[in-house]
Image (cartoon, rainbow, N blue to C red; front, side):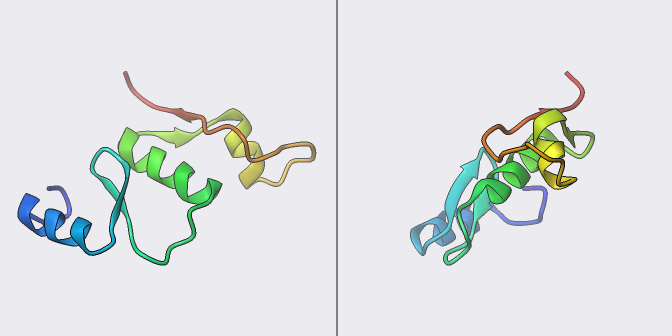
Length: 77
């Protein structure tokens, strides 16, 4: 794993409360499961060359009329 954890270590933690947010992206027990968390999980899953895009970026920059419904990420294909 990229963060230095083995598959066994991750399985152990999944049995104790971690959840899978995206492939190879996990959330911890007690964390707030909201739009912001899912946006970050999507960006982590997409890779280090990805970026928050369009309507999702509008939320971050607090543009008027933007609502946290869509998760849009852009990156290399």
